[in-house]
Picture 1 (spheres, rainbow, N blue to C red):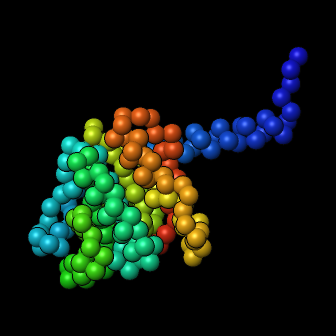
Picture 2 (picture 1 turned 45 degrees about the horizontal axis):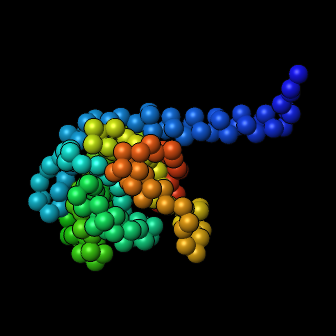
Length: 199
């Protein structure tokens, strides 16, 4: 009778649990409909609005004007918005009420951010999505189902420690797969970054 070595079985079982846990991180997330109608502040319009649902792929990005990691990824996000202009709608979500409208508009202008920046003043959306850091991304398919959550790539290993350049592009891969209607095998990768504002 064939017997699985105890060490090999332990490794296999641990990997299986990690895979189930990672996918459950996404499955536990609510659909876009659960946050799309929550009030957010538009610094450009100087009025409350909502995220809404574009009918495209929707990418929500928790972002901060002061977080170095958020700043470092503005170019990557701009490139993704340009590459998938027809298929993808990006919204940057600034959590809390720490930043003035002028600060946010200056941030957008300085880094040529091509997608709207909205403010989750009461942190309702961030709490609903169980957000932890900036930047952290949430990709929703055309039906509003969350298909990927977490890190943009593996450039940032831990807070304050980066690779010379990334070699795993989690978000770009997920977008490409979603556009093609393919399964997204990596549905969750823990994001590293700045803690969300407490106020």
